[in-house]
Amino acid sequence: MNRFEEIEKFKAEKDKILSKEDMSRKGAIDKEIRELVDEINSKDIFCTTSSCAGRITLLERRSNKKIDSKWIFSSHQPVKAKDIWSNLKECDTESDVWLMQESCILHVFARTFEAADKFLKACHKVGFKRSGITSLSGKIMIEMMGNEKVEALMIKKGKILIDEAYVNIIIEESNSRMLKNREKMDKFLDEIRIIG
Image (cartoon, rainbow, N blue to C red; front, side, top):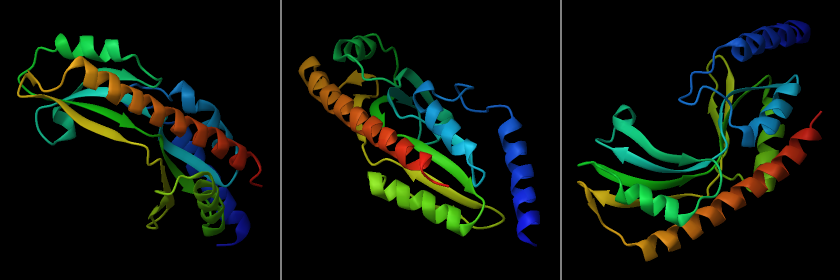
């Protein structure tokens, strides 16, 4: 395949991916990561396939399977401890409930190894150390992921395990990590803008 054919093949695949219906739970790209996603997709060497800006959630888990999990609370912004505490107190469940702060995640299809290398160098430069190539079969797929994370069991079999003072502490930590994640995203956006 010559370079022109390779470019045309990538463009056709990218058009197909970007025209698909958003199948995420939310059904739309998080507004906090939209500018970054748009900038990546403006490059003729990249195509995003999924994204999340990062969030703080209360997650009810009936088992270890994703299908058996339900969001009780979710925010892509820093949260107030009193809102988390009130959600926990009002929680009517016999299952386990976890507080989770998760960093941003992006899955990106790169046209060439050279493009993937540029993307990963930008990731590592701004501190997204847990980023790498996840697939080479048919497509060069990259996963970019932040390492700021909090995961804590709050309710076990319907019983609240913690008190309000603990919620204040863990939410302060979760918000701090969320803001660090956003700072990295802003720096990464600057790096993506200069990729040719």
